[in-house]
Image (tube, rainbow, N blue to C red):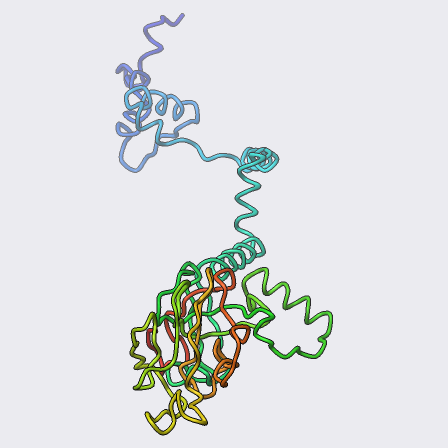
Length: 308
């Protein structure tokens, strides 16, 4: 009969201490050239012991998520409904059509209420403005001072020749342009220099051929051309008299007397009033409500960039 103590002895009669050592120590205690087998049960025991000694290290060594679990979580996330208002609004704001619409709306507001470029079609403002110039008009400034260049919409008193009937589609596009700010503000838009203000008495000419405002002559260095005037030979008292002359007139309230810088060829407020015997009904005014804005700069061509 074998005693219990004999089970712990090896064949040499020495105690078998290997069963008392951990797995790693057993591997170190194995004879050279011989590897001690490590079972999964012993490896798990070592990992458990190491995790108990180093809990933070064990937490960092988390196992990767299995493919099945990853797929389930992705599906759950994709099926989750987005925030109903904020997400939809953000999606709309990122769309191309929304951004295009906002751009056109902002441009329309700027052109309608702040600033707008205009094309100069004729030579009535030479040498200040040449045919083909593009000028920028400040639409916030609708209170002129004498000598400023203004754009305004001519009313029926200017007797602009009626254009032949246009196609309905063209008329619609012109209407949209006027309303949106991308087209002309009126049927007949003109650009002239403000000479007489409301309530002032304007007359031409003194002995030097200058315009009088409340009996005081004004200087006009911007003139490109003017009607011939020679004191004693061709003036306001000779026969024939100079076409530069017109009788005194009081500018009505909320109206402005406007003339072109190229005065000899300009169709302006005094065009029909330079003849002898003209009546006050000959005058054409730029009304305050017809003013579009002040021309402030020549935009094009680049060679003519300048302020006005």
